[in-house]
Amino acid sequence: MNILVIGAGAMGSLFGSRFGRAGENVFLLDIHREHIAAIRRKGLTIIELDGRLETTPIEASTNASDIPWRADLVLVMVKSYATGAALASLQERHLQPSTLFLTLQNGIGNAELLAGTFEAALVLAGVTAQGATFVEPGVVRHGGNGPTHVGAWSGGTDERVYRTVRLWNKAGMEAHAASDVQTLIWKKLMVNIGINAITALTGIRNGAIASLAPARRLSEAAVLEALAVAQAAGIPLNDFSVEDVFRIAQATAANRSSMGQDVDHRRRTEIDAINGAIVRLGEVLQVPTPVNRTLTELIHTLEAVFEEETAAASVGGR
Image (cartoon, rainbow, N blue to C red; front, side, top):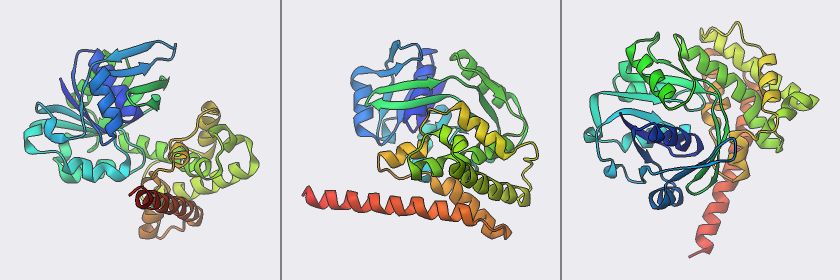
C-alpha cells in the first residue's frame, strides 16, 4: 500500500516507521527541514519502549512535488492549524479516485475540513492512544502503546475501515473499527479540554490536574462547559464525566501535554481546535463558555509573545 503521511512529527513519524517496517511504501511530508534531512540521510530512528533503537529507511521531503506515486491512504497528522495548507499542497497526480484520507489529529474541525475538500465518503477519522515524543531530528521516542479506533466520518463501518484496521494490525499496532467515531473524537476533546491548556499555562504535568485542588476545579469547570456545548450540539456523551478526565490525567501523570510541550518550545498551539472550538460552537448554540474563553485568550496571549520574539530574533539576525 502507498501511504502518504502528512505531518512527520512524533506521532506521524511513529506510524510511518511502523508501516515502513511492515513492508508498506511510505512517504513522509513535513515542513521541519532538519528532521526531514536527517531521515533522508540516515533513516528514521524510533527509540522503543524497551530502549532498543529501530532505524527504518523511509522516503521523506518538505516538498509535495517529490511524492513519487499516487497514494492509497493519506494519513493526516499535522497540527490542526496547518491542515488546510497541508491539503492544499496535494495535487491530482498524488491521488487516486479511491484514495482514503484518515485524520487522527487533536481537536475538532479536521475531519470536517477533509470532507469539505475531498469526497466525504473517502474520509476516515479516529483517535489513538499511542504515544510518542520528538527527541532530535531523525529520532522519535515511542512513549506508550494504546489502541487506535478508526471509523467512517459519515458514520458506521465498512470494508475501507476494516482494511485500515488490518493495516494497523499488520504493523503490530492494536486497532479497532468504530461505528460512531464522532463520539470518540468528542470524548478525546473533553480530555484535551480538561488537561492541555491548564498544563500549558501552569507548567504542571498531567497528574497535577487531578491532585492539585485549584487545577482540578478549573479543569472541571472547563469540561462541564464543553459537555453543555456537546449536549446542545446533539453529541451523545451521556456516559462521559469529568471523572474520566481525572482518571486519564492520573494514568498519564508523568506526561507533559502536547500543548504544554508546544508552549515549552514557544510554538503555536492547537488551542483553536480544542478550547477555542468549544467557545466558537458555544456562541453559535448560545451556550456560555467563560472558562474556555479565558483559557483560550491566555494561550493566545502566549502565542502573541512567541510571535514577537520570533520577529525580533529575525530582525536581530539580519
